[in-house]
Length: 53
Image 1 (cartoon, rainbow, N blue to C red):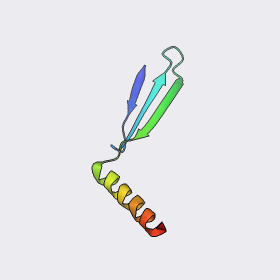
Image 2: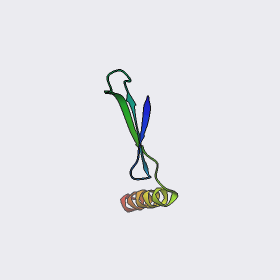
Image 3: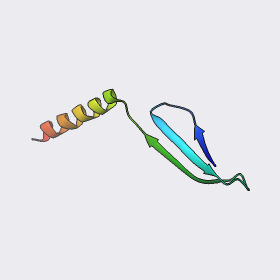
Image 4: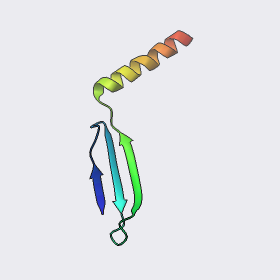
């Protein structure tokens, strides 16, 4: 059984729970940044590259 977890909308979490024991069998977490965050990250990376040149 998969269960969702709520929290920061940029982060997603799921867990697989064993139906018989109720124990967590596996889990995953990943970040889906907004377009603004991606642009900010890319600009910072470009600035670092320019500073090294």
